[in-house]
Structures are given as C-alpha cells and as structure tokens.
Amino acid sequence: MKRTSRTALDATVQIQVLILLRQLQEELGMGVIFVTYDLGVAAEIADTIAVTYAGRIVETGSVQAVIQGPLHPYTAGMLSSTIVGHKRGTPIEAIPGTPPDLHRLPPGCSFAPRCASAITACTVTFPPARHFTSGRMACCVRLHQDSIEEIALT
Image (cartoon, rainbow, N blue to C red; front, top):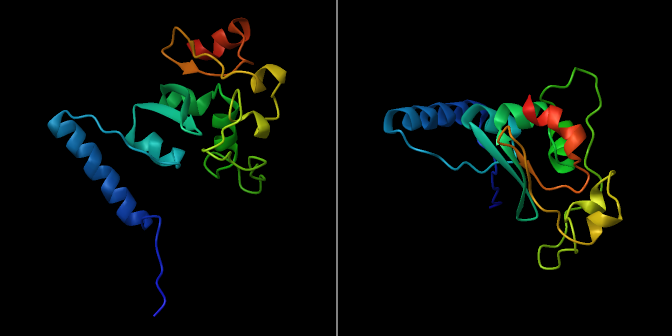
C-alpha cells in the first residue's frame, strides 16, 4: 500500500480554520503566532507580519504595509513569485538559486547569493535592523534612509 502525505489543507477547510482562528482571537482577546509561506493567508489572519529567511527575521511591519511595499528583496521576491495580485497572463517570477544550508550559513546576509541587488557589503556581515517611524523594520544594506522614508511612512 502506497503512503501519501499532504502538506496543505483543502481550500474550503483552510478558510474555515482561518475564520475559526479569527473568531477565537476576537472572543478570547488572544494573540496568535501563525507560521506560513502563504502571504495570502497571512494577509487574512494577521495584523503584523515578520518575514524570515534562513532563520532570521529580515522584515516586519503591518501586513498591508509589507505586502504593498516590501523593503527586503526576499519579501519582494516572495510577493512576485505568487499569483496573488498578478494579472492573468503575467509571468510569475521565481526567486533564483536555492536556499542556503542552515548548518553552513554564508557570512553576511543569507539571501545575498540569490539577490539581484546584492553588493559586496551584503556578503561581509549580516545587515543591522533598520527601524522606521511607521513601525517597520528591515535588514538590508541597500536600504538608504532618504529613499526609503517615503515608503516606510505610507
């Protein structure tokens, strides 16, 4: 007998679980930590999102702000590699390369080998968190306060 495993919920069951979680949050006044790669699900269940790559948080903010204006290249790559928000017939852009071996993380930003915007500084040390007045945070050496402040405040 062949064994099969499932890694995703049926869409109808998924919606019911999300509705139940939202009801429990409201009724019990509780917080929920929800771990998912599906940004569409995150948008439905969360108020705040933390995007991680290779075990490190690379961006945080309100769901709306992160989805509408990602600050970290990995977040942007995740959003461009999903059908959510894309017009029919528009190609989906996959993130190039492969994730790093978590036992042998490269120095610097773990996303640098896959990032089209990487510069030498990205490979030297993990970028410090940059906090913005809008409550957003991102870890990327390419973030410059002058150009990003407009995005962070919207």
